[in-house]
Length: 195
Image (cartoon, rainbow, N blue to C red):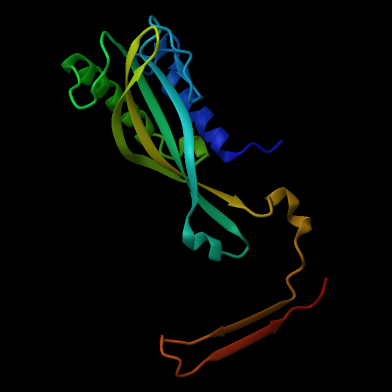
């Protein structure tokens, strides 16, 4: 069964950042989740959440034939830390800042050394980071959000459905060679033998 590339990217990233016990990849250990909503508990930090947000189609890829669209998805890694008081992103405590920077460095190194995300992406890179505060009824958290751009391609219709395509029987191209000024136009028409 076909799985969406975003799902594959999320799960690969989760597994990459989790590593394997007893040699976990980050101080979060096995608390790395492929979800936007962490099962937060005060004694379960630091923890990481991996999720995807917006997906955009790379504009030039819509001009391909056969149709192979390149998509850019925002891949987010949230690193969650427990703090003793409400977190102010404008004035973080040195301890949280240092822990966050150490975690960010590990995440950047892991993601950078696997920029094709196990073959599920053509490329990926860090777009930016942002600190946010999260307050619950029971505890206060500081969250370092790291957003990566990940690129993947999809063929339409899916390559498993190639029989659904009409046979290509005629090519008809018009173009203006060497100029943007309409001084002359070339025209090619090619008929191909039928099936």
